[in-house]
Length: 427
Ligand code: NAD
Image (tube, rainbow, N blue to C red; front, top):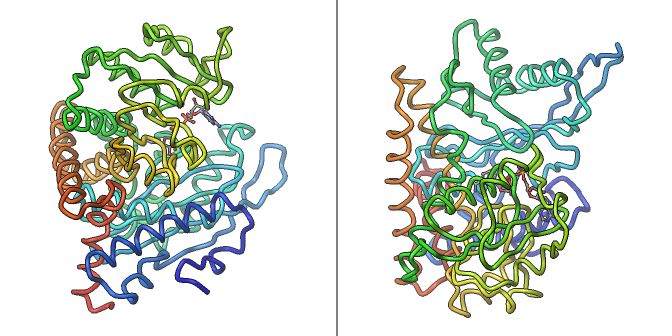
């Protein structure tokens, strides 16, 4: 068995999700090795310290009871409590949740947040459930994990198909169980319950800050730069809007059904108005191209903001962007990362570009703790300060060690938890 063996990761057959964990383990291993850590440190960090499996009985609207399966992964709490979203999804797997908790640890390390990574999920299809069923499921999940979470233990947040209403129910359930108000138990809450200004757009703002810094490194003026964004959901549509507002020409966007491309620029405000809540907009138009064709169009900045595994060794040679900034999780394979880097394309990896969300989650937790709230401008300035520094630290490390940006980001991301684990005497 190799060091990247994942047979004890849930016994799943989903190759893509196993690959997600395996490729994360490969880069963590390389990063630790580069920094002189031994195999024992890798053994500690290659999977979460704790993985909880829960079963949640929910009374459905028709009077029947349905049992839902859920997970909570806590990767490493050497630096501080773990933090990370809870997703509701019909195909989510334990392996995926483990990998996502590890990415959260990396993002916390990169943004210099005193937390480790966590992630949770419930196997369900929220689109087919009523408001009442979703509330009972959310509350049931909190009861099931209440012993292992808390404002100083593990802090959940929104993720795919969960939102501020679900965070509000979860916070209320936790507060009832503990018999005191516990706003710091969860982030991504509505403002009136202690949410932070700027939380909703924080992910896309983080991506935008990385685009700006990467553009400076490549001498690209964003005013007039051609930008392509794959995916027009929460992440992609806001990134397209921020780029448009910065004077860039957004020449291409896409959704699951196809892509719109116009070398003279698309009317982003119109597309934002017309997109539905699932990020679909291309079905309103004729003459669309495929997602694959869109990725290969010439542009200055390419932002994959849809799903994983979009740039692989099969199409990496055809990418004609000067900068690729990963808004989605895992859109570029390790082989493609190598090819793009060798071709001189600056790749800003997901663990850096996607660190905006967790950074503002941390800000929300800090504001809850101090009971004093910041304006959106204050949140934006603090976010910018953190991510600009992270970008430059990673860029410099990549130059100094002659490694790609992904490996440099993992080196910085894993450094604090490795050091803290060492000081605690765990390795
Ligand atoms: P979303 O569900 O709101 O939107 C997803 C978009 O991708 C939609 O436009 C959808 O049509 C499109 N899509 C789905 N499958 C596709 C396919 N096979 N090919 C092309 N397009 C496809 O999701 P979201 O919240 O925007 O998240 C998108 C990605 O970005 C995810 O990987 C998510 O984890 C990540 N994310 C990143 C940030 C960040 O700050 N970087 C923030 C939130 C989400």
